[in-house]
Image (tube, rainbow, N blue to C red; front, side, top):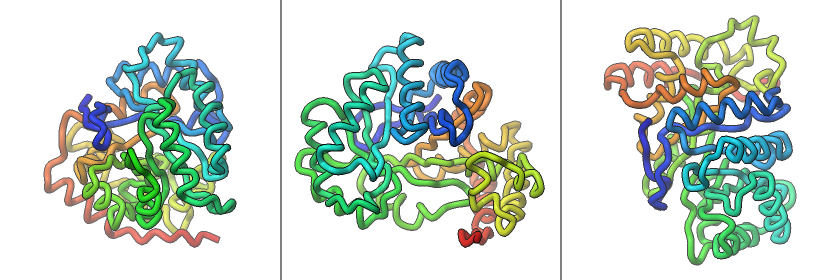
Length: 316
């Protein structure tokens, strides 16, 4: 495994993390023993960054992560736990209440990275109200670092202006070879400000791996069934990209997932992909995305194939 530094913190994290959204009803992985085996394989593979969230399974993911780490005998300083507080929980007092419950589910005394999952779009909580609550929790030793997930640059600036003693260390955004909007503003902003950028859905929920035909994709019953990339208006294009990824993967003796993740980490040293996994074998596969690099020519081949996509999100 390769390692990098989380923002400006000096904390060493694996170049590939483990996303834990799959431990939820949304993805259908609700068996704890399977979740534990996935986390065990991640640790065995050198992955020390686990990203979860309060809303994943309404606490189920955090509970699984905390229980597994305890049962596996993982020392607290051997793993970096990142979780997220949703926009619905951002009233000042609710921030403390939500973090207390998160600490309990994770069975820890502190959380390494607390990220605001999305802005409070429906409840109009002032930005400085929740940011100052999070900073107070840093001062109290319950959070080490603060991040923002799914925030545009303008709101990142606003959030940072509220902080007195700490700064935002991490931005988390959707970023993969089919969806590259983060390259326009957010990745340059992270690079300029010494932040890490956690890439969620780095494999586009599997769409760019080309596992399913167009007909099979329309029959998916989990969260992918509503994803625009699997929509008939988009998926044929995505399959063309998947074919290019597979072609490059065969050249290197790698899997399509490894090539797609390697491409992301080559784009910027700020990018840390956090793919999920529903089986231990998938974790091992993802971990194999580092320790080697695509040639510039093959990186450009995929760059150009990706730029040719015209994804629409108007699917109804």
